[in-house]
Length: 130
Image (tube, rainbow, N blue to C red):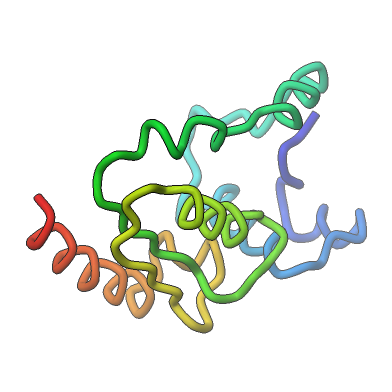
C-alpha cells in the first residue's frame, strides 16, 4: 500500500485535498525532499503496530535533560503539534516551548522563514544548556 499518493493528481482523484497531505506529497514525492530509494510503500500488516505504538510511555523517566520543543503553529492532521505538546507536558525538565505561528509541519522542514526562526531559538537553547 502507498503511504501517500504519488502525485497531487492522484491525491485529488482520491479526494485527498487537505493541506497536510498535499504538502507531504510536494515534499516527499518530488525532488525537494524525495529519495531515490523511497518506495512510498508500507505493509498493511504494520498498521496495528503503528497504531499501538506509544513513544511517550517512559518520557517522564528518560527525559532527564533540559528540553526545548519547537512546533509548527498551524495544527494539521500530522499529529505533530499534539505530540509536541504532550512531550512538553510529560517532560520533567521543560525549559522552552516555541510555537511558530503560520507554519505547518512540512514547512518546518525547509522553508527558510520558519527554519531560521527555529534555528535562532535552538542556538540560544544549546548555548545555555550544553
